[in-house]
Length: 186
Image (cartoon, rainbow, N blue to C red; front, side, top):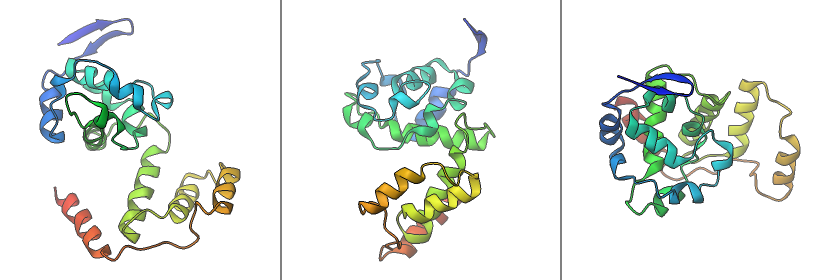
């Protein structure tokens, strides 16, 4: 089935809402577009659509557009949107699900190098039990080739004590690694 838009016909996946519901554990169809999620989102200005628009597009079955969007990749998972949702939709869980689906279907992220950043973040958590910004960013900078981008900001953060020189490990690193192994099997 197709819908006609200004940009031309768009394919509809009438099963998309059901799949996202099942995989995320959230009931997308309960969103009635109050926009409370979008009004509290700290990264809204950087995305190509607001969180409520992502949910509406899921409801309409616009799978291809959602999986290609920048919004699903720049979500930081802060849960502000979910805390504001009157229907209790945990939108961060939905965004995680959409990223997983995009990866599984080979859809390239709309934001350049965002998947690489995502992997560097997870590698840091896997190594130390929590993220160590210094090593994570160094890995990202080396792999992406963006060596001098943000040097000024990084230096200011370091001088203010916001970036630890050495990683702080958690006592239960083996538990964290076990979670990663469990997630890989799933």
